[in-house]
Amino acid sequence: MSSSSVTQPPETAAIIGAGVCGLGIGWRLAQAGCKVDIFDRAQIGQGASHAAAGMLAAGVETEPGELDLLALNLKSQAAWPAFAAEIESASGMDIGYRDDGTLVVALTRDDERQLRFIHEYHRKAGIDVSWLSGSDARKKEPCLSPRVPAAVYSPHDHQVDNRALITALAKAAKRAGAMLHPGHSVDAVLVDGDRATGIATSGVRHAADAVILAAGAWCQTIEGLTHEAKPPVRPIKGQMLSVQMPSAIPILRHVLWAPGIYLVPRKDGRLLIGATNEEKGFDETITAGGLYTLLDAAWRTIPGIEELPIIETWVGFRPGSRDDAPILGPGPIDGLIYATGHHRNGILLAPLTANLVSRFVLTDELDPALHPFTLARFGEPSDAAAA
Ligand code: GLY
Image 1 (tube, rainbow, N blue to C red):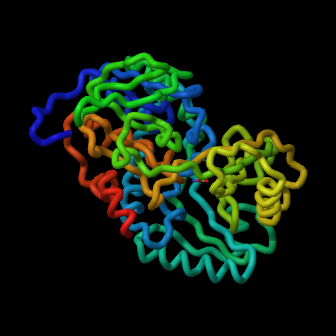
Image 2 (image 1 turned 180 degrees about the horizontal axis):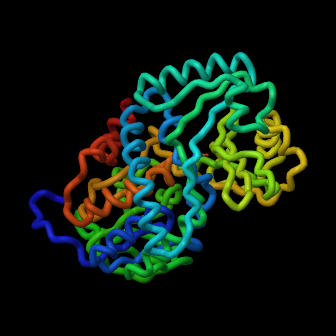
Image 3 (image 1 turned 45 degrees about the horizontal axis):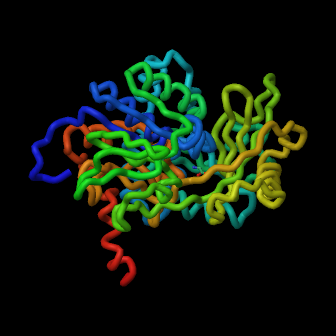
């Protein structure tokens, strides 16, 4: 939004994408009295928000070179308990928030050396993690393979049931007054001069004071944006599956990372196993190779999964930006605000995205935490080409 314009909170907002980001922002805007319409090409929350595993892993998912992202992720992680409680109270639903922490295990001496390296990096970055021997790890998780030589425990990396979260957020947003429009593919953002004026869906124009682009991996398919206003976001395919744990003896309690996989035990006994990372566009194929890789790694980590029934397989598309970090806040078109590119961290970043992007929409003030994450960081297209 331009600095010369008189700042008035928008009376109407059109949100493109009813995933965790679009719903969270819509909920906050509706709570503030804005008339909100949320459009989605499919059913509510059926994109990356449905496919995700719901890990709130600001700590153990941090990789070297991601200190700005770590700060953002930690801020959102800290907001999660209050956000979860508020959604549960607004919706009357349990969203499966679990605070058991996360274990990262090595399976070989080689993995152990690698884990030691990343553990040192995490400690120096100020993340609260502790080193465990193999036998201490098995005290926390008795079904771990006897081959596990060492592990790291991260007490603040938790999980939420992302599918329950979406259902609850949609309910909370509707109760606050937001209108949801599933099955309404947005063809274009309407732009008049240098200002967004609404969206078009199936040829029907819908005027809005603010337009929020929260369409995840599908952002590139929206017309009406100049090259520099299109966020550089692409789909990164992930295949996953789930098995059913015996209710009397859940074979896992913590979220668990092992080389090549993660395992996420749900309160209802499902055990999620994920995920592949594939650059295959919107290819929805579930492959023998993808499932084999996941099951082999899971079986080597927890041999007891061998007899468990497979209950579901699925594919999701992470919205990956050029630097794997989200794109949040303003861009080159007044009134068009971005909330996309969350890559592996969409569920983790849900509270921060909802709170800070909606605040920007309402006040035109960009929280300093978002400064490193606007679209402007990618520069002009000519700069990118020269780089
Ligand atoms: N954050 C988990 C994944 O992207 O697979």
